[in-house]
Length: 289
Image (cartoon, rainbow, N blue to C red; front, side, top):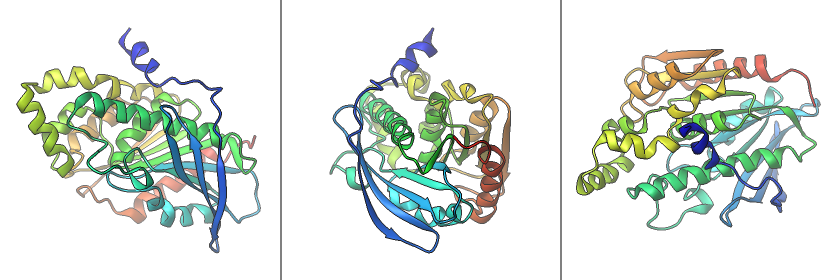
């Protein structure tokens, strides 16, 4: 079965040491900020930031974040401030070829399709290793780890939460499935070289769909059920085309919440955050172990 074969791509040696480095960076009124490094597959050392709230209610539910394309782990810190006030720890990594992991001339969404797929698989395993790390932390409630991500963090996050059963609830913001359609229609500048490469190689979009199926969230999103998932979609989005968001949300099982906004790629953040916090309060503030 194709799905079983695809899932094997994201497996790794669970006994591999994390070799974590954790150092306190700073404090705000609402949280203590730590810098973290840990080992992942392919000799990758993953940089991350980890916030621990100051409210006295240990252990804390934790939200794992992934930034958008071209972003970095620190992008989530303003949101972490809001989450900390509600008693959530947060954890955010630099995706491959982003932040501290940037490599001149290399991009995550590579026009070389095998590299494109390898970069996505690396990202997902890096996020799975993040859960391994969080399970070692006394500050974190192991059974109450959620995920939130937007744009690239929504696309790859949808894939991650489908594959990683330790994520108990997920919020996906302007994240799409059907990567072939996304590459065909997206106006994001990172996609243009991919389209040019496809044309040069004579690869049509039906062929592309088969090539990318092992890393396409739409192949996996049904696996999230019966865990709850929430989608936030932009009706006029042409970066992550609205149709790819619709298809991803439609393919997901229940329970799910789907919100559509009269917006493009930039959604009304305050309303989105309010709904995400209510969702996580409902699904993650349960038993603490």
